[in-house]
Image 1 (cartoon, rainbow, N blue to C red):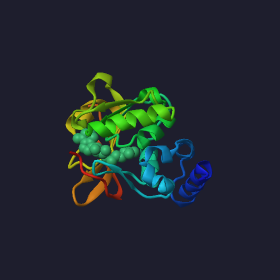
Image 2 (cartoon, rainbow, N blue to C red):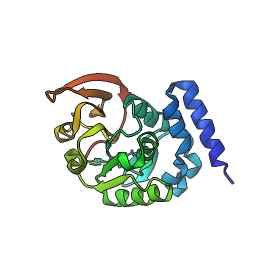
Image 3 (cartoon, rainbow, N blue to C red):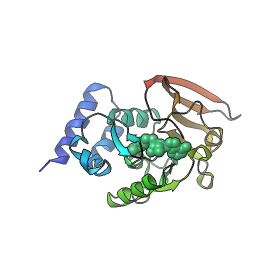
Image 4 (cartoon, rainbow, N blue to C red):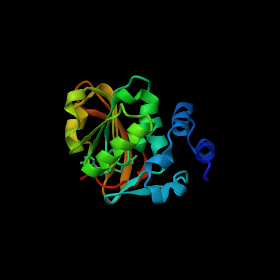
Length: 208
Ligand code: SAH
């Protein structure tokens, strides 16, 4: 039988040696059982640092990408966070480890992925993460304002409604582009404009 805890520890050690130096993010990655989120047929590869298919033509991001995004968002306990693109729920669980599950609101386009993610999150102890099926371009107004918002799918630009739901001084993070994408982090200024920075080339599934 696979020793999942050991496989996970080894993955986190590799991430720490390579490029991730944020202790709180590494601890979060060490806590979330990624093998429970990936489809059963893929669980043996859950702790390889690579993306995996999760159904409906979508993929779960590679662990290092989840860690990089969590570090760029500088997530603190108590931050209220909006995620666009729940997928299997893994990234939401890592965010929940950092801010508290009750502070995470995630929107997923595909109803069946949203349903499955809700189930897995509940089974793994992250049942307080809120998941809604719908178009993430509309964000989730009821729980705004957010301290942080991020997309796990690539958009040509930050969706304006999502930006509006982030408080002044808050951060938004997303893969921006089409065939060629950049991870862009932006701080929302009081007047609603964005102070942007680029954080490397990435490859994500497109926003629907
Ligand atoms: N964070 C996820 C990875 C998701 S892949 C995980 O840990 O598994 C990107 C996800 O974005 C897919 O599930 C896709 O269905 C979703 N998506 C694409 N367009 C969307 C939209 N307009 N609104 C909400 N979700 C969307």
